Image (cartoon, rainbow, N blue to C red; front, side, top):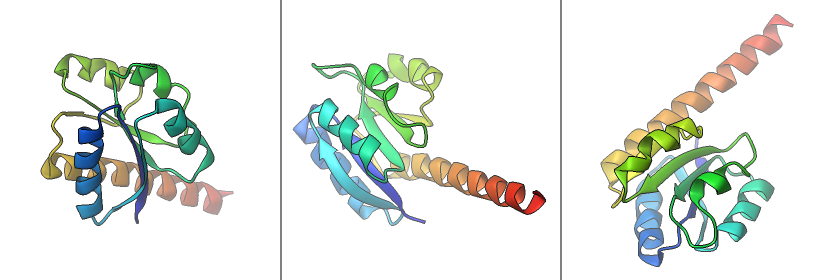
Length: 132
């Protein structure tokens, strides 16, 4: 299973780093990167997106407020230079929090969590269909 991913971050450097890490991960398909959070929001809600890597501190809107506007089926990995955002990330429904700068081993762990959740949801849906 490949997850369709979008990255939303106001830093071009972080977008480039995230893109390289995503392209090296066999379970991820990079759909797009956005420095403009509202363009990213539009893509998240209009395309077949499974996962968003989301920055917290952006000039136009903070990542937590933006996350509340995503369609429900999208999983979110929040990333920030401030570890103090980790609890808020989980409180807002993120599947994981990653401190910047991102690294491949940590991204792999976060992606495995998303894949486990997606597989569990697929299994539950199958059981529900068979039971009815």
